[in-house]
Length: 246
Image (cartoon, rainbow, N blue to C red; front, side, top):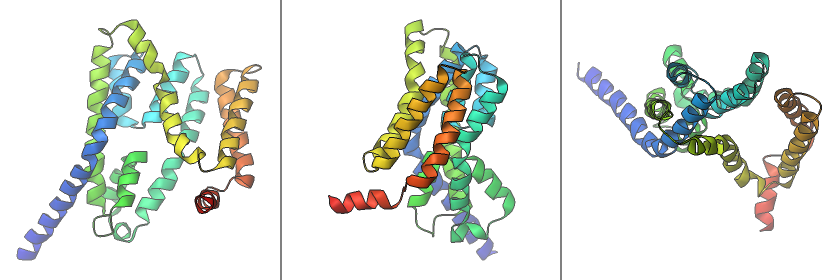
């Protein structure tokens, strides 16, 4: 009986540790979710559709990409392909998380639940904790925090969209580009080949956009340039070499 109570207490502490670790992420999730909701409402989504996407899809960049493409009249096939390509990184992040020693012995059901909450930010938090805390309950605690904050932000943005000036909602359409720029810039400063690949992709997308629809231009340029990048971009060693030269 004593062991059972102690075990339950340890599990609860893991959840609480996850909740605490997720608190700083709220500062980024709520504003980004408001921006997404405003863009979605501007694209013609209802309040329910906007909120449902956050509840069941829960991928910030993917949601912004989807509503942005929808607003430009992209086909459903193009939206599905583009968001799938963008979300492929979550498979790698999930594998990395589930491969930690403390995660291997966990049951499948809670691991599937935790995997739904693996985002760029929760992945970063989970990777920084030691193995004693890196368990499924900690990850679910982080997930609960960021999922709730993302959906609260979405609801705020969806309900306030009818009261904000048009210039405010229109200006938030750059949120997606700002997000990707913030993610890319730190790595580009240390990896010249990656910077060249990004530039190549942008040029390819621009040229293709002149002859085919922008949505398919984005998909084709991403696939082609990603394939090319496999052969000459080294994300591991080049950054290390740059650091050594400094």
